[in-house]
Length: 286
Image (cartoon, rainbow, N blue to C red):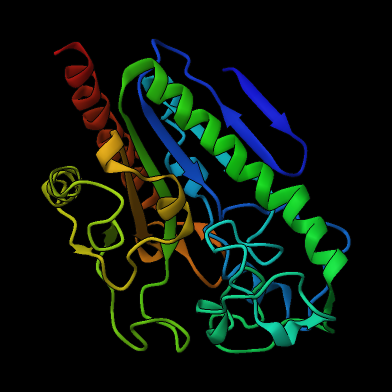
């Protein structure tokens, strides 16, 4: 397997067979905490926010001709699935150089998370502007730049791209999320309510998931975020789909260990990839 590594930032797994316009990005499974990282909450609370094992679930990407991009750092360090300007001003020591646009950060879940999913404050102190800039320049922007280059190469070569932004979610909505206390479907897929992929592509993925015997919600409780918004462009042939898998299907959230269900979920993800690969192959040879 061909792997390109930017140490501590990302790993790129290139196709091991004939390349196809299929890109999977796993941005929130990173577990390499920079030594500068500090928090007031227990590590188990932080780790509960990691999309554990998602990189392994989708690891069949390269063998099917796709490219997988994996962020090595945790989203608590900086979240690539948030806008650069989605920062809580109260977290910053000093003045940010441009006007901020806090949205999800108002709930504590922005670019720099200020709360855990259950609302506990996570930072020991405010962050200096220079510290945040280091995270942007050293982690956030290189990840987005690499993903943009992968997608552009595929688009130039094939005229179309399927991009999956892959995550996992808790079985019940947390207090800081759009569906507090509600039980969730097995899968949630989204396209920011029609903005980042065509209805046909989204329906194709939904039908695959339900055909495997899973329940699947669409654009609720999540619709997708910055990774889809920034890189998706269905009018130009870039179909960007957000995918969440319910943790209850494959892991024990108390021990963070895989359960017996992991193998089935991994096989299901590979099936989804196989069908998307077949769809892409048919489109580029038509």
